Image (cartoon, rainbow, N blue to C red; front, side, top):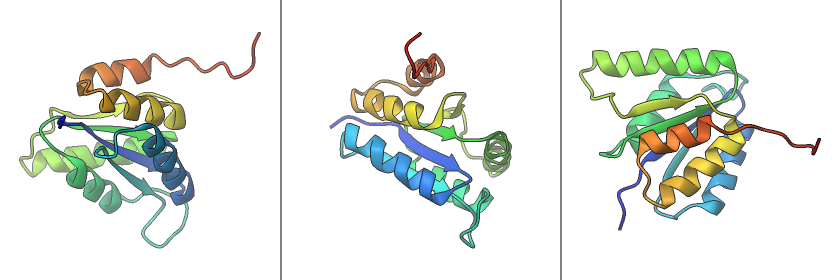
Length: 136
């Protein structure tokens, strides 16, 4: 069995995070750990530092964690969480935020992780995604 990276989906909406996770899991090795960290703890739109921290800790392993986010403030919240982890003396060298589209990035990351790719090559692959949904 391969050691796989963990994926965390951070969205302002729990429905978007859960749906993205569901789609990505359909393409992935069933052993892949993906956690959706969407919405606030009281069920509203927004991001929740505790949810994100818990998700990272649950999927973190020797291969690392790749985090995909939706909007700008979800990146800022996730960066603050990673800073908190660093203060807790946790190895954050393999906890990375991908600058990639959320849904497409999550699906591609899940497929790449299922092939046993390392976090750095998966991050590069999803960050190279160019979205053109309508033919020119």
